[in-house]
Image (cartoon, rainbow, N blue to C red):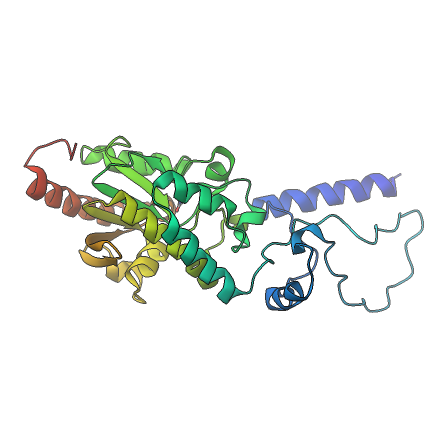
Amino acid sequence: MIDADAMDREALAALLRWYAAMGVDCALGEAPVDRFVQAREKSEESAPEFARAAPEPPAPAPAPPPRPQTPAPPKTRPVAPQPAAALSHDAAAASAREQAASARTLDELRERLAAFDGCALKFSATQLVFADGAPDAKIMIVGEGPGADEDRIGRPFVGRAGQLLDKMLAAIGLDRTKVYIANVVPWRPPGNRTPTPQELALCLPFVRRQIELVAPDFLVLLGASAAQTLLNEKEGITRLRGHWHDYHGDGGTIRALPMLHPAYLLRAPLKKAQAWRDLRVLRHALDQKYGRGAAGPA
Ligand code: URA
């Protein structure tokens, strides 16, 4: 005989396993959040939004009578702090610009970013993932955003894509002591989804300031999010990759090379041939600037 309670638990466990396999590994609110409404409400109330209970979802349609022996679900469940709440998009963008511009060092920038509440990603992520590598490097690599491993460990590119990136760097005589690595968004998007244009725009002043403070000779932009955001381009990564572009920073123009993202190369290994061509383009530029055969800039 099947125990209905045990069956429900198993069904629930199976559902959770399926969610995890589909990449849904982060519990957010039960109902979609209209952040524009939140922002309006926020401006009328004094308590921070994330400190208050989530709004009741709209009244549900009349439910069928409950099944016998099945406990009714609790009326309210804990939800992740509802961010950002804090500010309208425009106000958050203005705050991001102000905070980023006022940072005089990378340490200050990291502090400002850690204190910045304007981007909702912060509230579903475990921690800020700011950078790895050498802050005085001549090559700065910018990826899209942290994945699950980076979110757990707090450093960019430490998961499978990061291991591939290390191999790609080694193939042209580079390693993490010779590059500085960051992302266009420093908090993990839930389920590893692509950051939205709004999230990218909110984080942009910070990564631009990060580039300005590192002041590299070369930028390597991994994947479409990094390349399109930093180059202000709409063209796809397959067209952008492998050619030098000008990144127009506040501290001057920097040569930037878009490349295929290592996470994409893991899914499409045949594209590694293109990535190898792009790495040789980078190596050639390094040889021209710092001398042929040098293991890389000091
Ligand atoms: N992918 C990225 O774009 N950045 C990371 O830090 C890790 C994976």
